[in-house]
Amino acid sequence: MTIPKLPIHKIKSLPKHHLIVAIVATLAVGMVVTSGIFYFKAKNIQSQANRQEELEKATKKLTDKISKFYELPKDEIPTVATVSEPEKVKDQVFFRDTQKDDKVLFYKTGKKAILYRPSTNKIIAVSTLDPSTPNQSESQKTITTEPKNQTGTIAIYNSTKTAGLAKKYESLLKEKFPSIEITSTGNSQIDQVEKTIIVDLGGSKKSDADIIAKEMQIDQSTLPAGEAKPDADFLIILGTDKVNL
View 1 (cartoon, rainbow, N blue to C red):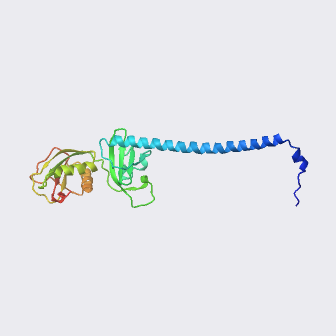
View 2: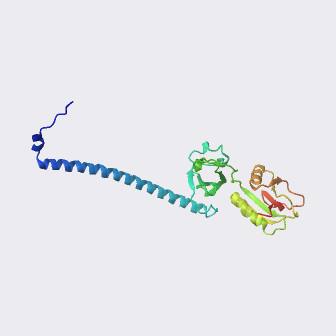
C-alpha cells in the first residue's frame, strides 16, 4: 500500500505564525500536564509526611503520659494500635479485660506489649511478645504471658539473711504487675525458707495468686505456722532460691 504524499504547496501555504502558535500551544499543554503530575505527587508526599509527623507527635504524647507512672522500654519508639472491636480479641488472654479505644503499645526490641486505657490513665495488662514467627506485623505477634492486670495488696517478707532482698523483689514485682499495691516489706518470722511462696491470705483470690505465682516462678501455699499475718490480700515470703536476684 502506497501512503499518499501531501502536496508540498499546502504545507507551505500555512502561515508561519500559525505554526508557531500551534507549537507553543502544544508545548504549553504538555507543560501544564507535566507540572500537574509533579504537583500531585509533591502534594501526596507532603500529605504523607504530615500524617507521619502527626503520628509521631501522638505517640510521643502517649508515651510521655504513661512514663510518668510506668517505666517504658528505653531508646525505642513503640508501634501503637487502637482497640476498635474488643469483642473480637477477648478470646486472647492479654485482651481479656480490654475495652473500645484502649491503646496497645508494641516494643519490638524490648519484646513487650502494653495495654493502656486512656480514659482512666491506667495500664490494664503488660506482657511479652513472641518474636519467633517472622514476617508478621507487630499487632499479629503472639502475646505469650498472662496479663498483668491483677489488683490487690501484697506484703513481702524476707526469710533470708540477704539484706534489702524484699525491696529488690518489690521492684521486680511492680514491673510485672503495675496495678498491685505493695503494703509493706520486712523480715519474716520464719528463718531461711528454701522456696519462695505466695499466700492468698483471704482465700478468695486463688486465680490471681496462681497468675502471680506462675509469672514470678514461685509456689502458692498456705500461711506457715508461726508467721505473722499482714493486712493484705497476699503475702510473699522470699526464700533462699531468690537471694541471687
